[in-house]
Structure formats: structure tokens, C-alpha cells
Amino acid sequence: QVQLVESGGGLVQAGGSLRLSCAASGFTFSRNAMGWFRQAPGKEREFVASISWSGRNTYYADSVKGRFTISRDNAKITVYLQMNSLKPEDTAVYYCAASSSYSGGYFPGQYVMDYWGKGTLVTVSS
Image 1 (spheres, rainbow, N blue to C red):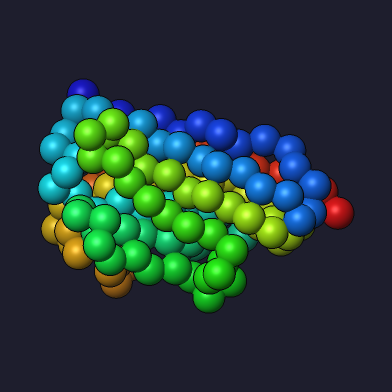
Image 2: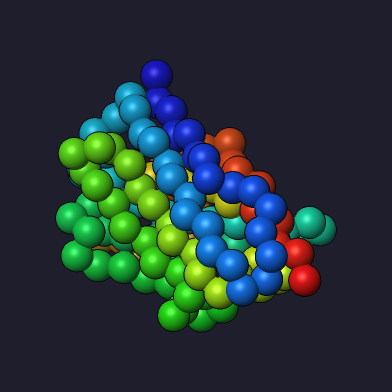
């Protein structure tokens, strides 16, 4: 059974940091690119960051570039999202997802994702 379980969300003040983790099981993690997406209240889910199966290639939304860092540990079957300099507009439910077809990490759309986690809530107060 495929599982993606996010953790690390919570309440933080603007300017603070959080590190999200996503533990995977039930599929060949090392052959999948991984991504983080988020959905703010009243908005559509959007791309945040992605990483290739090897970890060599990473991609970021313009809104988080320079503040967020995605990484992965294939031995621990986990992907991370380090979030620094958080802003109130970063408040959202954050989801991790996996794609086997686009293992290079560049996703043309959310439709290429094979598996999704249930999300973890990040709230940034001003």
C-alpha cells in the first residue's frame, strides 16, 4: 500500500522557519521524482518545489525561490522542505507527491503525480 505521510507543519511567526518531512512507503521511492504542493484557503493547489529521483535537479516556484529548499534522502525514503523567512502568504496545507513518469523532477502539471499525501498545515502569523 502506497503511503506518503507529511509532518512538521505548525504555527510559526513571520520570518521564522519550519522543516517539513514526507515519509514514503509502498513504492520505489528512489525511482520517483518528488514534489511539494500547497493549497491556501480559498485557492487552488499550487506547485511549490520538486526534486529529481537522484536529487541532482531541483525546481521552485518563483514565490518561494531563495527561501525554501527541497531535499531528499533515498536511504531514509524521505523528502524534506526547509522553509525559511516564512510569510503569512505561505499559510497553506502542504502536500508531498510522487511521480514515476517525470523522474527528472520537472512537472508540466499536477496531473503527472502518481501518489499524494494527505497534507500538513502550515500557519504563518504576522
